[in-house]
Length: 209
Image 1 (tube, rainbow, N blue to C red):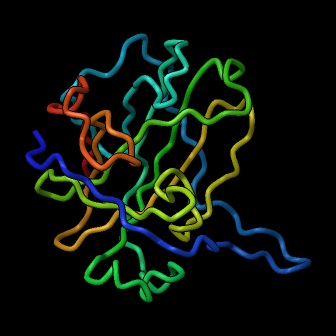
Image 2: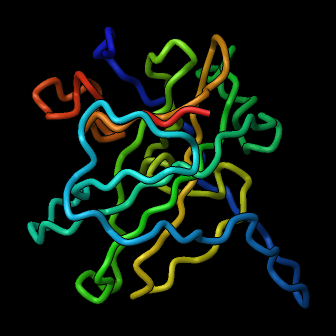
């Protein structure tokens, strides 16, 4: 149960976070490739389910497209980041005292042709070793937490339309202790407060290292 229902995304004011490929050089190889997660579940993963990093929960997508299609959310890795490698991080006083962590998540859905060209995702949120929510990075024209892997400094494979699989990375933040896991409690990363009326609010799905 999450005692504090207030959540907060911090602002990264400059969006110019790019991985440059020099002329004549090939782009860097992805650090992650999609893993096989097995057949899609016929039912949502029950509230309160505890998973290890690398295990998959099946949930209705945030987009709410009405198809009833479930999306597999797999927290692949959580790692501490070097603040110096995140542009403008050390120059922004809003981040004083924070340590950044990368959270890499894989999404799977099928049949992929039903949503060709779109990515279906599940909004997982970072937690500390006490189970309480941590914070994450946002910016003025869109939430980096929604999948800009460049903010993490991690190269992910490009999304292929019709593949039914996508990877994202968002930057989680902590002032005390490491980020050790993630939860799904039905709340979007664009929200300010936990949606306490959601089925998963009081008994979220949890991934831990």
